[in-house]
Length: 315
Image 1 (cartoon, helix red, strand yellow):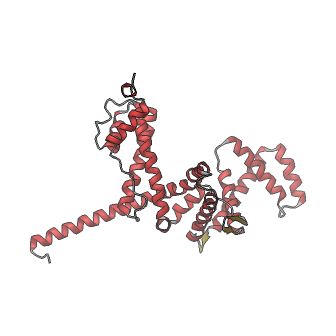
Image 2 (tube, rainbow, N blue to C red; image 1 turned 90 degrees about the horizontal axis):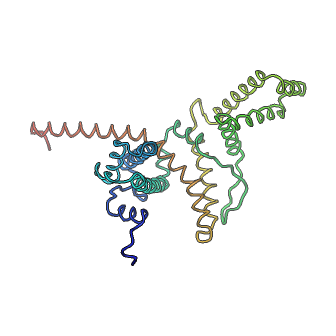
Image 3 (cartoon, helix red, strand yellow; image 1 turned 135 degrees about the vertical axis):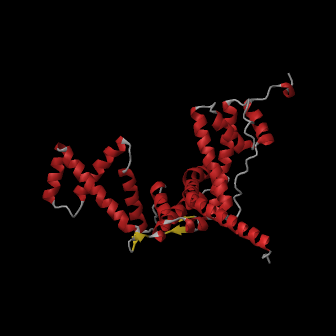
């Protein structure tokens, strides 16, 4: 049988179908920041995630299939006759393109995004993203000096993240580390250290109280570190993100593009890109509200213009 007469594989058929019918256009990475463009693109990605999650549980959910079909093809009926794996693969491919483009868009408009994020959004980012310590290290032609204040704050944040973990194994290690830190503290007298070591082995209630007290003190220390005049210090929060990203990029750029293509791809997808994706998610809600205000103001302006025209008052 000739190659022309062979039945195409599912992968080959899907690629052909995607080129023919997909009508989803992700945001252009090189565009300058525009509120309406960003909000529409981020909303589409948010919807993608929701529809794909529903279909992962019920591949034949009609509402999700129709919604995804419209998002992909601008036709709610296009999904009819498609097998679950077909629409899922096309959806995943489009979503991946959308995520990559959005990350590049945020990267190219980084300062704009950082300026627009409020202190709450920035705090959520530093608590949700991996942060990296500085060290006196050469990266090609660049040297990143050690920043002790930054490193201490990163250590504190990482400690708080672990203390808030729901993982039982992590919780056990955290309790051990907390008791160890208390015992090593220069502020705790030797006689108290002996008592702590004794009760740590015999009294679960005592251990719990010590852990709660330690967590409270560390949370207070974090609050003091990131506030200025009683308010969240946006500059300090931005600095945590800026410096962590700078270290990630230094590692990325140190690798030769041709010789270390996979390693660079790994750093981009697992370390750098998550920063931009989370920044987009953090800004979406507030920018959506601002866009709604813009649209409403434009609507009122148009109504006033129409009214003036009716009265013959237009210029």
